[in-house]
Amino acid sequence: MYDPKSMKAEEFIDHQEILDTLAWAEEHKADAALIDEILARAEQRKGLSHRDASALLACELPDRVERMYQLARQIKQDFYGNRIVLFAPLYLSNYCVNGCVYCPYHAQNRHIPRKKLTQEDIVREVTALQNMGHKRLAIEAGEDPVHNPIEYILECINTIYGIHHRNGAIRRVNVNIAATTVENYRKLHDAGIGTYILFQETYHRESYLQLHPTGPKHDYAWHTEAMDRAMAGGIDDVGLGVLFGLERYKYEFAGLLMHAEHLEAVHGVGPHTISVPRIKHADDIDPSAFDNGIDDDTFAKLCALIRIAVPYTGMIISTRESQAVRERVLALGVSQISGGSRTTVGGYDEEIRPTDTEQFDVSDQRSLDEVIRWLMELGYIPSFCTACYREGRTGDRFMSLCKSGQIQNCCLPNALLTLEEFLQDYGSAETKKIGQALIRRELAHIPGDKVRALCQANLEKIAQGERDFRF
Image (cartoon, rainbow, N blue to C red; front, side, top):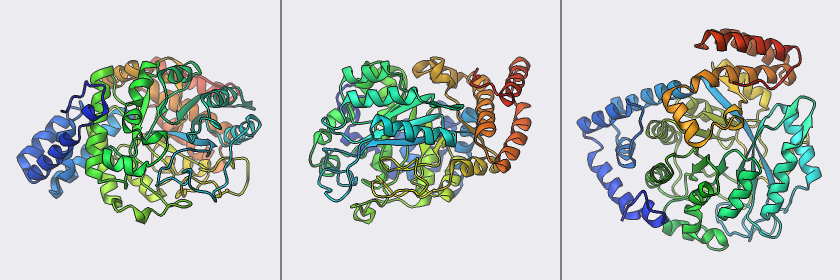
């Protein structure tokens, strides 16, 4: 029976509750009065239950769907303004003992080269990322207790934080590794990680077991309950996600929101981020083999409704998606994107993009400078801010600031300061010209006179060579 406060995966992600929810949503999808009532509650910016949000997802009334998009745009603006945070993935190792049928790193793939970065490799990779201008990384590794033990991950994190090249420094390392123990999560917390990210892949237990036929990831409960263990280990910020295309998207949407409800009910704080990857072509993987793929219109609606249902949660979209798709969903809720990404183990320090160990095809292959310029031309403020994490504004502290709107007093000036750093150190002449004009315009939007004056003073110091100011 469905119980969001339960610590058992099959009870806080209850299969029958999802089926009942989808049936109820289908039954009421054309009930205009009900849809209007749900939208009216959504306008209060306090989120929606998985059942109410599922009714909106099922609804096909054109005028109501347009209201959903308008509301998603407004909520995105209210909580995140026009700021977009940038990051890059760093693949440490593609050794993996699991048999996930949708991932080219699966243990049965005998023709993909297996690679693992040494600490010297990491210095080269991170230096190359710093030379692009990145300040935030998400490290990725396959599950392999021999090649990728927790000690290796911790050593990599320590190495990354210790690399300082000219004005470059990685200020936040997020971690996307396999489900592990409370003890190991505590070690990750003590190593100073930002967000722990783990994609559920699919919440449909039967499909999950079929898609993960071998390896420790086959254990559905161990995987699904990982976020509870991470929080027990002291990690405040956790990131959810499903791989859309493996199972029916309406089922995944309900399960994803139920997981968010569970975290809120048990820990008092929901997910820090939600990622929305779609399955893509990769070595040994044909996405057409999975018959639950979703088109761009459905994908956009999913993004909009995630933003409405969990208004305070950051949303991430990677370079899996094309420039056109990313541009469409930025306004609908996405607050973080990757840029200049390479999904191989190694390769950032190589001029030609390697593809031999890619986890998935990269659709958006522009440089970070090109992505920054594109965002600014669209009216967004690219941000490399890591201030909340470094000031201890994580977990429930971050959420309380976000819900009250007080976070706005920090976010805009921090975004402008980190953008100025990028422009001074890494921006092309054209990007720098566009960016500094944007900074001058946006300064006027900082609400407090004192904060605005201090931000202006710090911008001038950055132009003179000083770095790392934050509110």
